[in-house]
Length: 177
Image 1 (tube, rainbow, N blue to C red):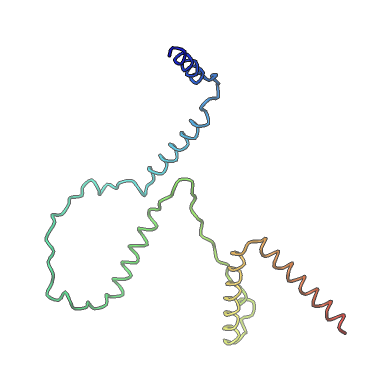
Image 2 (cartoon, one colour):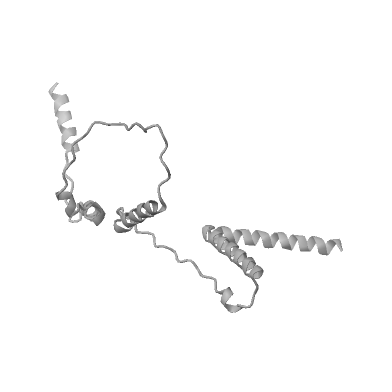
């Protein structure tokens, strides 16, 4: 019985051997943890998450039981355009004022649209030509947007395949004549 215990003690001693101490031990992990704490601090200290001065003076209104009007089942008339515009303006102000940025992400910059200056070159055109030009410009802008969305490698491979097809067609036409 004692022989078994002494064998087990030796195995336990082998398992509990200390690692050799290194000067760099744990530096990567501590650096990652520090970076995470810093990103967390940046996230929670944003203006979008800070309380405003008005929040300190806020007093909760007492809760009142729900009361239904006598005309509850009737539809309301459409709101005025001024009221809708005020609501839209208020919503835009709230959206512009505070924007929440997640750690590791950057804000997407707004892309500027290209302005077409073709109308300034020929002011003597009639209205029909101008309408046609406007339609063409709209389709060109739409095509540019499509081009941006397609990968360059995909675009290149499509062009190469099209050139190969054209070459095969030309060879077939040349041999058939």
